[in-house]
Length: 115
Image 1: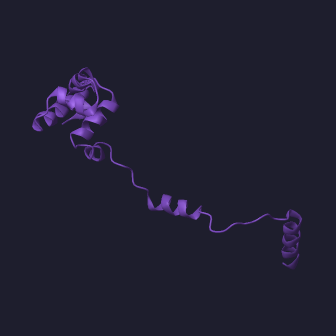
Image 2: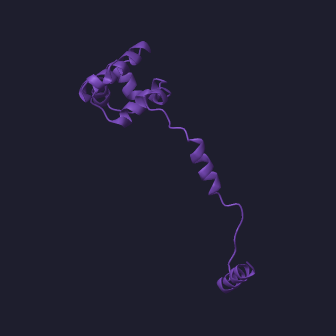
């Protein structure tokens, strides 16, 4: 399907048609689906017409056993190896405790004077 050539409304209508086909394939009436998802019949009809809220879509997909299709719809972005290394580098390995700033300055001065 060429979604980029379709209007937003046309895509919504297509999603509604696909939901309706899934419902009919499982031999479920709109009323049965509404009762099972605790969503109004009006909201089910709106979904199948392409005019529904995302929460309605999620509830219906859950009941039809199609929630897994969301991964194909919007895939989860994997963490790149660089991002993973940066996250692990920031992980604290030990506590630093309270530092005496004067002592730190003296140690630093001693190191600089030795060079």
